[in-house]
View 1 (cartoon, rainbow, N blue to C red):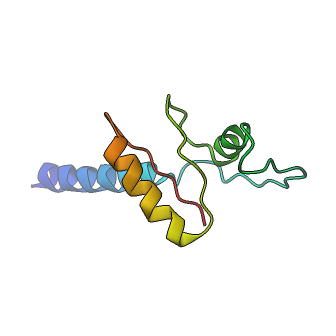
View 2 (view 1 turned 180 degrees about the vertical axis):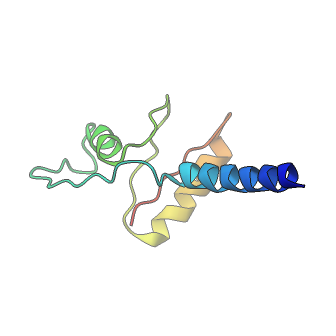
Amino acid sequence: MINAIGMVVLVLLLGIFTGLYVRGSFRPKPEFEIAIVPHTNDTTFFLAVAGLTTSLTTQAEVTGFFVEAPEIYPARFAAIRRAQRTLHFETFS
């Protein structure tokens, strides 16, 4: 009886910690003061954003950076239609 309860508790704790890990709860929270921000059309903008956000870097085609909501969904749908294997979307607020 005690072993079964212990196993249930262990599985629950493992599930909780796995969920927290996947959400990024154990990542350090970066605090930055940015002096010079590259323009969104600059070729280094993607690298600057990836470095500041601890984003996963992959081989990818950057489709763009969008500020206004009406631009976002048409661009996402177009990227989905062109995708050959996987998609990576990141949203910042």
